[in-house]
Length: 333
Image (cartoon, rainbow, N blue to C red; front, side, top):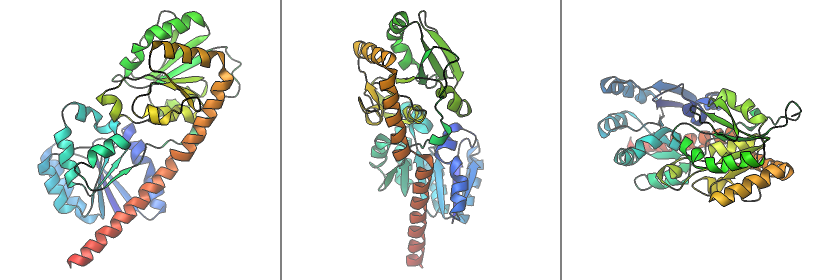
């Protein structure tokens, strides 16, 4: 079986997390997975689409094409799969790209979505949608055992500049926590940072290679958010990363956060300023309870979000669509 994957950027983190890292796993199942970075020019892309004739399945990974390109690709592709996540297409949807999204869903035989909301959008125009969350390689996140080198209690937040405003929104809460507990610091894993007056902020670049160690000596993950279109598009991957490192998570009960964080089992849900202050205070003063929540969260990630298992599920789905394609070819002959 041969699968051709088209993407905008083969080196992007989201492409690696959703598709790229599974190439070796696919090869072990005798499936050839070839990656092609789309040309910047439409004429160049049309030439690239001709390659689809040599493959059993074509995947559009995190890209939305126009109707002319989709028509050309559809003539060459036996089976067309759209892989979508909030990270890869969220900005385009927020910028008015919903019509483009809907058209591509109509052209697709299958949509692989990172979570429920995207799958529900896809099913308005596509007959078949599968939910496959962004997997986490749990074994790569190792909890630091010996923390004797300092006495800090580290809060940690992960995100990019587009979502930093959610963290800034709870700055007054963080300032008050910093005033109450001088040992508490905030680690911000991002591509943009800000300062607090009463709490030290530790900036760390938001790169996957840094993430494993950056989380290992933290104590409490935080994921504030507000209800809105963006919060519905993003999945719970960042929370799962924190869980993989054994951290309890305090999160707003919004979007996927409300699904991934189980209140008083894997973390705490906080909706307003008072709840955030209370939740942070409870966690800071009771690190043992937080450790229990973090351990439960890690087990949840192992059970539902382990990358290898998600890769295997994707392989089985692709095999199924390959069989469907061959049966349709036989019937048409």
